[in-house]
Length: 378
Ligand SMILES: *Cc1c(COP(=O)(O)O)cnc(C)c1O
Image (cartoon, rainbow, N blue to C red; front, side, top):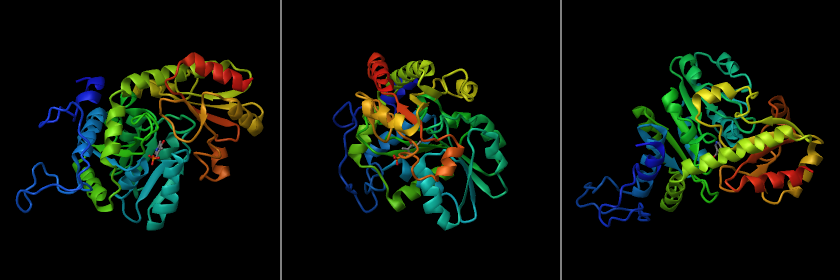
């Protein structure tokens, strides 16, 4: 099956009993045992396992080209399941422009358990490997990164990583339609399904996919033991969203490419960050490991913070809001919003300046989006 077909069929055949074409939302918390310990399809209690969740997990695994999927109540809960693979003294190398909530979790939650986190400058991916030592157990990357859209070479990191270190890729920005890290040598893929996979800004959720049975077993244990599971209804929403992932992504990136081209020409715009632009430093690697450049564009605005506030105030279609990846176009101010938890000097070092604006291009008519930007930039 090809990608678009898998998104609609993998892990989600018609209901065996009724023939219902969509996977039922199994709200039941518990399941009858025909005798003690005799479960009909292995289901016992819905934190441990639920048919609506299992179906979504199978679909996600199929889309990422992995063996096992696990769903969580948020991307952050999925991230914590992966970090739980580590022990005190272990070292993780990540990048300074990793998702702000991930940075905060690493620094303010897990560092206190004796896990060490190093954050490399992601504009120069070679720096990541320079930080590695014999205690490095994990490389944690996003590609493209948020909000600078830096690109990491997954194959290269997989080949050059220190012995015994797991390569984890947060694939939220690319989605499996554009990039499948497991096929490029990563061990674990993490998602905030809140973004493109759900796709409609109406459900918070997370997932991880792996083909490593030990990782799967350990993370599944964590999923049940700690209990940050999504509701069956949320699983349904994500599964429904993913059915249109391919058509949505095509439109998201078409719109992003058109907006990036427009911004490059605009006299009030400084730098434009979009991996689809030929002069973007990650353009060539992105071209090799992705089948498109996704729907996120960042840019700097002449006139500093006051120009940025004026721009936000004049927009009519773009909504000033956190998050990304929905059908509606959003904009945000990374310096104070998504990356508010990162110290100012760290942000400035990596280019998250006060005049930086991030756009998440939705799937509206591109003419309306360009007109809206034109109005707001005038
Ligand atoms: C939003 C996001 C997360 C966190 O996911 P939640 O669902 O908000 O917990 C992690 N990584 C990236 C790249 C994100 O955009």
